[in-house]
Length: 330
Image 1 (cartoon, rainbow, N blue to C red):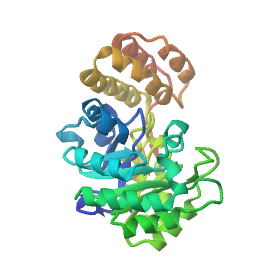
Image 2: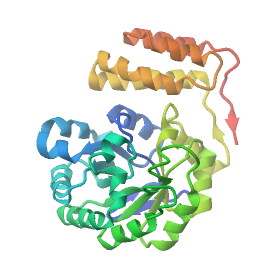
Image 3: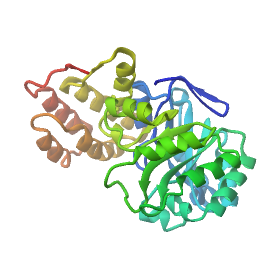
């Protein structure tokens, strides 16, 4: 089930990748997930309007390094010409371009971008055609099943994208109206895989290593894109590789959890300075501090952290949790 994945001219070592997540998949988080085995990582969503109008400020979102490759860049916007111009601007910063046609949040769809595009297949065709002409990088789109429940346009959209030169499509099989509620309908991924010649990646409800292998097995998709399942859980990439290769995986105990928080803090501090790192790590500790005795107390205490030393002190409290040692899961 785990295989190399070819998207246009890009060949990935395997088919488990980190999705773009607004406010999350910055350089520190990407490096953390790459260290745990992610074959490809994406930037946060990059506003085309920001690139075209503000340039340098928005390009800061694309900051990377040698250890952060291959890198996918996700753009969002609703203008074919602006998206094409943005594609030209960022082509030297990454190894693959993705157009967001799935984000359901109001401030994105209110601009006509994200999943709002699913209501206008003619515009989707124009966007993919314009961006394809503007760059030689591998080009993908990420979509949802449709705008409303039952309004399943995903296969039509995917076929349009393929015809206009897209190299792969990622499907999160929920409608926009569902947001993140209910259950992702993986049957849509299977249907899309059967209807396309280009690679299909699946996303949605991938929270554990068994989830990841089950999606690959049940849908036949070419790869999986992990989003919310990586929050406070960057080990999901390593565990998925272990489960596929040896039938079991090393679960994460409190010591490794604490070590990872420290590493994340260090990466953030080196990139953004202590003040920003501490502010950002508060929300990440809300995800890291789960599944062990006293986790809720750690989450509450994180809200009062002001310095890196405060965060380190919280990791020492995590290490001291009794009876929460590492074990092997299958």
